[in-house]
Length: 221
Image (tube, rainbow, N blue to C red):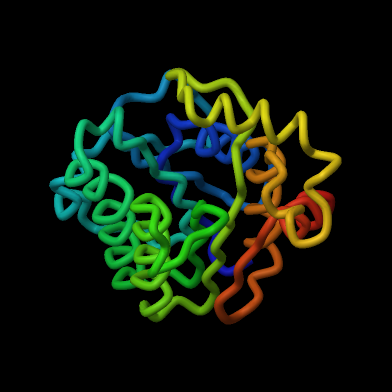
């Protein structure tokens, strides 16, 4: 393990909530710092919650030196515009990564998306690819990009497009074989376990994980 502290951003979301639970249930980190936009109801002896305005991240000073688990994300519908979406899904994640790298963080683990590509015709997938590029350019020893397809789990808000996608993926899962396996729906808890397993390994370099890689990592816990 590269650090004795974990920093999680996006802990109030689906994957982030599972990730926070997984980190607290393990004994890999002495301290788990959660940067959130609203207070957490959860309490734990090793949890250090910090409510922060991500537009004023410089107010978190000194910034924690920690392994970073980034599960920030929203939808264009919820954000209200592409510009607002870009701020949450790109700028906030990039700023956290830059502050973490400057503080001496060794590892950064990001929840990205299957299909992320800089020349994608899909705005969402282009943004994910640009965030991967920005983080990959920073001096982390280990960078892990997780590219799940539709995520399965109980969200606070309903995402109609994702719900339809999950239903279709489940119905057609038998057909999602070979190169299409990476489009199988992914339980959020499985993804969270995979992120911790990857952090334990702390393999140097840049790593990308799709469905089978994620499942394989999760089984190591």
